[in-house]
Amino acid sequence: MASVDSLIQLIQIGEQQGKAQGSTCSSALADDPWEIDASGLTYGPGASMQDVIPANSPRQGVLPHEYRNASKAELDLRIRAAKHALGDRLVMLGHFYQRDEVVQYADFVGDSFQLAQAARTRPKAEAIVFCGVHFMAETADMLSRPDQAVILPNLAAGCSMADMADLDSVQDCWEQLEELYGTEPDAQGRVPVIPVTYMNSSAVLKAFCGEHGGIVCTSSNATDVLHWAFERGQRVLFFPDQHLGRNTAKAMGVPLTQMPVWTPELPFGGNSADALRDARVLLWHGFCSVHKRFTVQQITAARMRHPGVRVLVHPECPMEVVDAADAYGSTDFIKKAIEAAPAGSSFAIGTEINLVQRLATEHPEHTIVCLDSIICPCSTMYRIHPSYLAWVLEGLERGEVLNRTTVPEDVAVRARVALERMLTVTPGSWQASRQASVAE
Ligand code: 13P
Ligand code: SF4
Image (cartoon, rainbow, N blue to C red; front, side, top):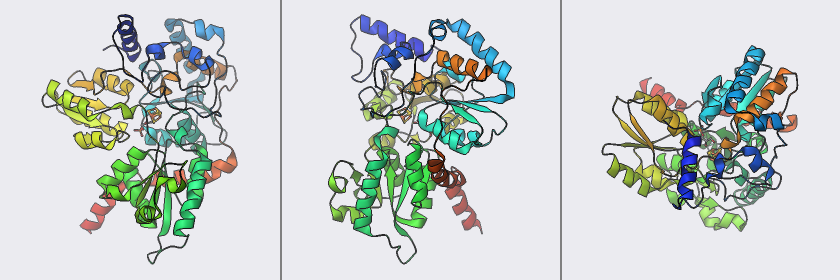
């Protein structure tokens, strides 16, 4: 199975031959990330390349020449040597969407929920090198011990979706909602609105939720978290991903007419006061540019090409795509569904290409394809490159902590409230508690 890097190279050859590529993708993603980091404030090539990056986004400083010029083989030797020398003093965590060239060194690979748990349960390590994106490293910092250093090998590895909600806009929304709904609970003790932020958000937004009776969710416990929120509130303000919010609430029976989208620049988010009074879930307008690429047409084409194919998609995909799929769920759900299938099954997957390619390699007994034929990885996950990894690991080896991600304690203290609530709402816990109460 070809690596994602080499598939991007193939697209490059296609481009040289004059074959058209997708509108939002560029094979320049396979270029050295330090060239992209130096080229200005941008998410860089890949799925997010057309999104607007905030002016205050973290920038990555210059990577020393010796790492930029090192061959793959040299980097491999240096990373392994540094890891060996650091031993238990280091733990390396990696998200499923990381490229294989990086994932091969990780001590633990998982989805956002599992990685948050992992950060909390590795107290022996002095340093956690987080191969993922910025909001994940922030979360790891808040959940790990204060003396543990969390390191993001490339500080420019952000998330375009997380950047679609900022504190000022959310606060402004909250003030408008308080004016409309008041702050008094109803007869059942439920407050007018509970804020729920997706894990893919900055620490200050997690702190906002902690402070206002809210909670964090991930794609693996979103249903359980919405149940948690509806027990405490009449409505939910869900940010930043409208698709995860809509798909989850719709599956719980909330009608689309009671899920208005909140567009931050507009008064009442672009809604009438009546529509907001009737709302059950207010959906922030954000989206993931990786998952936005998947379409119903791709599903139809996959079913024609592979009769009997099972279509599995991530809940960050648009509603029409989730509705047309056979099943949907977090990255871990997709992985487990494939592991549980009888040999000879075929799958078309709607999620980031690095995970799809890895699953295809690990499961030669199945046919596994990506729904999207254009190889367009997450622009920011791809910024973690073995050269940056070698640089931070060798830094640690000589006692130098490079690229530390630290959340100020006044923010962390409030964000932890919302994160700890999230960690108590484990995936499937709501369903399990219902089954238990029926059995009693
Ligand atoms: P999960 O790992 O929760 O499935 O999230 C996917 C994602 O988009 C991470 O950025
Ligand atoms: Fe953000 Fe989407 Fe990339 Fe995840 S896959 S880090 S949500 S842009």
